[in-house]
Each structure stands twice: as C-alpha cells, then as structure tokens.
Length: 158
Image (tube, rainbow, N blue to C red; front, side, top):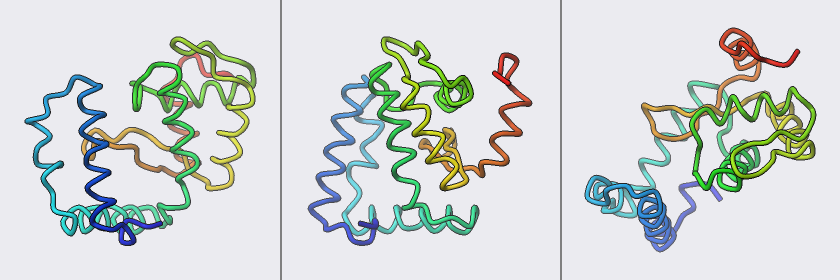
C-alpha cells in the first residue's frame, strides 16, 4: 500500500500511533501537535512529497525498501527499545561485516539477522541512514555507504 492508498481513517490511526511513540519516548506532545493535527489529506500529500523527493533524488522506488528499513528498526527496538538508536546504521553494518553474533544493547544481533540485512542491502543496492533534517531514515546507495563506512570507521572489520 502506498501513502496515496491510505484512507483518512488509516492516517488518523497512524497519527495516534505516532502519539503513542512520542509518549513512550518521553517527547513533548505539544511540540508534535503539528504532526498529529494534520488532516488526512495534508498527511497523505506530505507523505507523497517525501516519497517523490526520495525517488527523484535517489532514482529509487522508496516502497521497495520497506523490508530493509523495517528490519533495521526492529533490531533497534529489540536491542535498545528505541525506534532508531544513535548510529544504528553503523552498528548494523559492523554486524554485517563481522558475520557473527554481536552484542548490541540488551540483546544480540544474530548472524542470521546480519545475513538478512546483507541480502536486503545487496538486493536493493542501498542502506538506510538517519537523516536529522528529515527526522527519519533515508536510503543511500550501497556503494556510497560502503565507501563512507570505510572512511569514518576506525574499527571496521575487513
């Protein structure tokens, strides 16, 4: 289902879910009022603009990356109870390169999870990084990510 396929009720339910996440993360709900008060039509239009932006900028179909970003998010939630832990993309890539179970937060990133991350990244030729300006994960090309990771990581596995 694309963002344009969302019914007004689905948008309202999504906004209610966002409110729960904000409360769980102890964020000020007053600061998020603008997001929660979006009309269904405005929310759908905003989501479509973001999707179009990604498709134009990266030449990618944003909907196809759902399994990768979802798995990254699930690992973050499982290991840290955080939607997107700081530097999650680096920790997960370290696990992909290590090809072994890696202690992460309260849990372990399993070798199987690392292999699935690697398969999804290879299939879609991308990786997700947190974008502070947009406040959500953004896809980058896998080639760029590999080069970037090597440049910034001092303890990168070979």
